[in-house]
Length: 486
Image 1 (tube, rainbow, N blue to C red):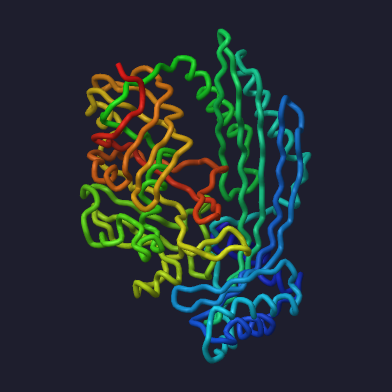
Image 2: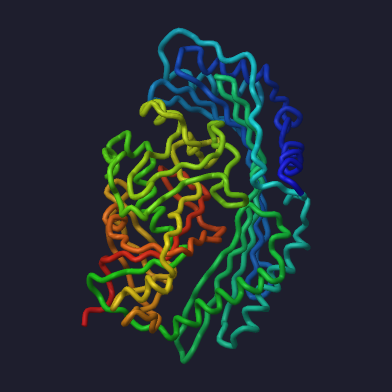
């Protein structure tokens, strides 16, 4: 299917949903926006949402839970400078929505303004088209995937005690209408399969988990993929029986490709979201145009890669999805903006105004954040370290967003000795500072990989959002390792 056909199919599933299902016409939207601006304000917007979610859990080879949920509502916002008036309602009746708009309007104290009398519909980019809606796929078609995953894990090792598998899918229909004449409708899918296994060997138990997903068709989960997920999680848990404690102290750290990009996201990316900088809470608040890393370091945040969790045809303010260079040749080039911060900095919004649901206001949030590939081969990076730690995966992270201080547990890793990967390690934490870590990256390999994790989400200001991240193999010349003192 070509991109134009994808867009046409997507538009056919999306456009007009709220008008045909709930009577939300352009005329009613204008009436609501005029009410939201009845006491003045810079602009106002409406955010309609209808979400259908399903969960299927398998434990001990049997369906443990299967359930679903539907959420419906509209959030109405009035903005004055950097102040926001906000109200939402779950009832899409004219009376209820006008009352919510009147509540949002109370943030202003001026003369009434009129909203645009005509709307320009935004075209989608066809980033996540669906041939079949998840709601049209019965549980009976999903259950064999879960059973195969369970059976494959037991077949791969006789040490497996327990397998817990889950599958989630959601369809989120949104419509954004703004007082300056933008109208955007989208159908946003999300799905993932997650698995956790418990093993026992010589009286000792270990546990590991893994998940894969994105904005895919359910046909994405082929038998080959299910088998690869099973092998990955079994490999992850079995290697823990060989793991030894790592030494403590300051030493070089190599971040492996892919999921370790969560460090880039948490310890560095948040500090580049414009609201933290506008409020002078970020280390980067006065660093635009200045060197923050070596010249071979380039960092991107974008929402335009098909099927990625952070990809969006447009953000939750109606700004089209796009790509934003954050660090170019080691220099900080800008921040991630919503409409409020963009006006403050007198720049254009970058398409990063995102919200968890109609019950929340949009704020600057990351999408797909990653470092571009360098020129070294991965083996060259490893060979450059006499003694250090190679990190494959981390978990249970804690980050102070303003300062960038962080601590992460190394869930999968190995020692590096004399330029070679040796024994697997356990009971290891790494600690550091995001901006300092960025400055201390001294080698970047040519193997950029994006995380395929489908179940994770990023938390900020009480809101949880799906994102994606990635990293090529990177050498950080020094970081604190909390291992065993010897």
